[in-house]
Length: 203
Image (cartoon, rainbow, N blue to C red; front, side, top):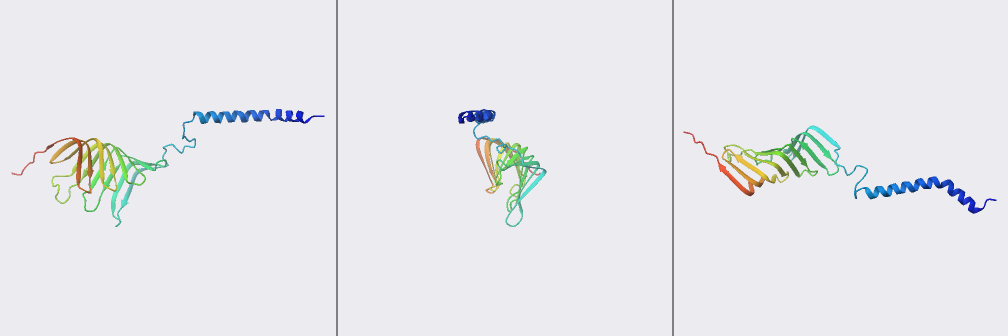
């Protein structure tokens, strides 16, 4: 007669392949957790992949009266859900705040935050403020640099890189500057140098 001990041994031998596979799977999972960097995810949620893209993109922001206050256009734009940012190739930002000169900003590349409050522009950034009310009869004010942080709602642009500001009357160079369209001011940070252009008087 088969004893209880013999039946237990026979059952253990029958299940031994399953137990072996289970042990192997457990060891594989443990090794994987030891090798994988902390905080990484295998589902792709931590990757900076776009979920939407558009060619010839254009978006506008309206004021309380329904007038276009700010517009953003780009040759190509794409949205990334991991940090809720929109990246743009050849972006063009136009600010048309009533009572203030129009400002056009262009760049090679830009990134706009999800709350639409910040734009980070890179590569041949050019800011042009149009003259208004006879204040600058000789032409627009132009600011160039290779990087600008634009505060869209505040209408400010800041850089810590070399920058040049000019109009037909003068040219100035500095390391870092802040342009404030609402306050109608330009603040230079360091190493300011410049020159006045000769004025041509009518005979």
